[in-house]
Image (cartoon, rainbow, N blue to C red; front, side, top):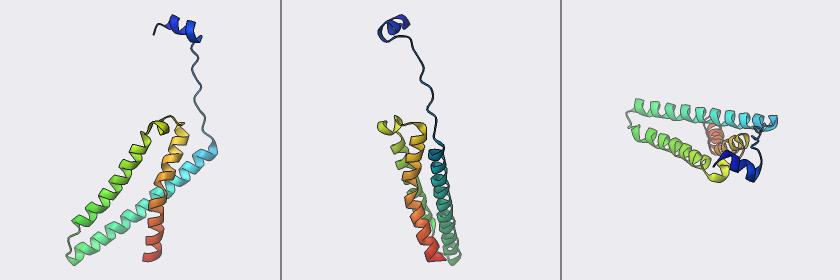
Length: 120
C-alpha cells in the first residue's frame, strides 16, 4: 500500500509500544519452569538408573528408553503445536510463556512426586 494512501485513510503511522511484562507473571513463569525442569531431571535420572540396572541384569532396555524418549518428544511436540495455535500467538509474549509453562508443568511434576515418594 502506498504510504500516502495509508496516511489519508488511517492517519499517520504510530508504532505501538512494546508490552511490558508484570514482575508477578515473570516470577510465576520462572517458578513453573524450574519446577518442570527439576521434575524432568528427576524422571530422566530415574529412567537412566532403571535402564542401567536392567542392563546390568542382562535385560534389553532399548525399548524402555525408546518409550521414554517418545513420551518426552510427544510432550514437546504437543507444546510446540499449542504455541502455534493462532489464539496463543496473539497473546503477549509473557502471557504465552506463562500459558506454556502452566500446561507443561503438571504431568512431569505429579510423576516426579509419585516416583519420589514411591522410590524413597
